[in-house]
Length: 152
Image (cartoon, rainbow, N blue to C red):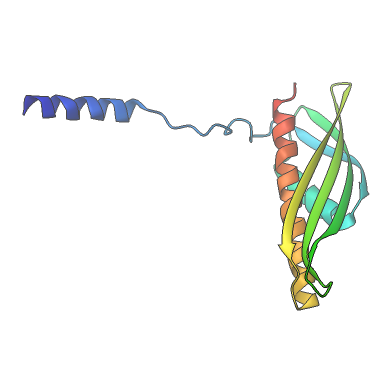
């Protein structure tokens, strides 16, 4: 009986003294303003990418980062059926960033892929592809913000 009480007390002490903190909680907080100086490449992916970047930028920050963006989007045929009709595609977005921060320039590239099946309705497929572009751009923007927050 005494052992159970001691075990419960130690368990309560250990559980209440633990602090949960997400690994990337500090990395996702931006402490800088992001200015996009040049955009080239696929217009729709860039539009979604710029929206995500501006959402994460701090307007009243003392530190400013200038970025040039070049995006290439391709839709590749991955599989065909026995009749030769397309069944699967791969959407691929390759984005190159030129980052100017504190009189130093750094370049890095992010490559995102997503496989999807061909839909029977062309209109529905266009909407689905637009949604895929939006998700690819969100993923690329998240990787950019993470890279900017850890780069000194």
